[in-house]
Length: 158
Image (tube, rainbow, N blue to C red):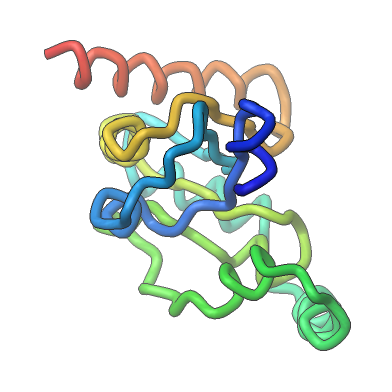
């Protein structure tokens, strides 16, 4: 963060849940962004079905994550690993299972377009302007992500 501030660069973070970011003190970086994955659909249940199919529990991945935690000096890796896992579902779009199963290195937002849009809008309200997405599964997934961002834009404009 200090380097980004000094260089006037965009500081990319691995975010906590959106509500936690709204309550946090904002650093004076010129530009802030987050790295997240998104799985959104018209209904929460469908988004969670897709998410669980794409990222099923993986004991080998969990062991690799634990090993990485023992040898890594990465502050962001420790920060995400330390977050308690709130039960996934319609009320909580913030999901760490892919991260904790060593399938990706960022949190995911999962849920209906409106639920994910609400989280995206909260991140924008917290000062984030750049969103670096985890690799979408394909063009269709990118369209769903676009729908969630569109809904977030509509929400922020209202």
